[in-house]
Image 1 (cartoon, rainbow, N blue to C red):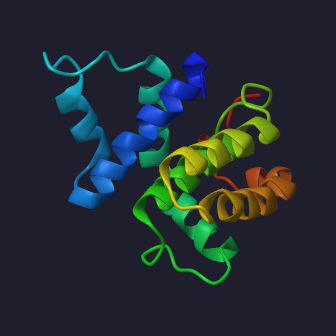
Image 2: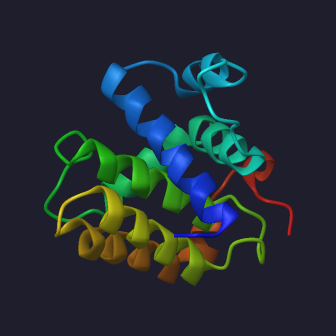
Image 3: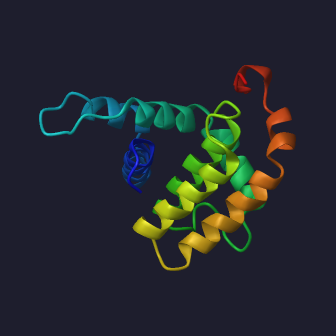
Length: 150
C-alpha cells in the first residue's frame, strides 16, 4: 500500500473504524479532525470515500448481510466491517472505470491484511469477490440518484 489512493483508503478505514467503535457519525468525526492542528491533512479521496460510505451505508449493510456467510455484521471484527463497507462502496458507487472491480477487491484485501486478523484477507476477498461477480446486476438495482455517472 504505497500509492496516494491506497493511503487515502487506509485513512478512510481509520475514520470508519473509529466512528463505528465510538458509535458516532463518521462525517462529524472526520469534520472535527479536518483542520485540527494535531491532525495530518486529510486527502480528498478519503473525504469522498467516507462521505460515500456514510450516504450509502444502509444499502451497503443490506448487501453485506445478504452475502456474508457464517457471520453477521455485528459479530465480525470492526475493522473487517469498515474494510468491507469501503470495498463495496468502491465496487458499486464509484464511476465505472474509476476503480476497476479487481482494484477495489485487491485494495480491500490489502487493508485487511495490514489491519486485521490472519483470516481476514481471505474472508474479505471471498465476500467482495462474490459481490464483484454480480456488480453490474447490483448496480442496476440502485436507485437512479445513487447510480454512478459512467
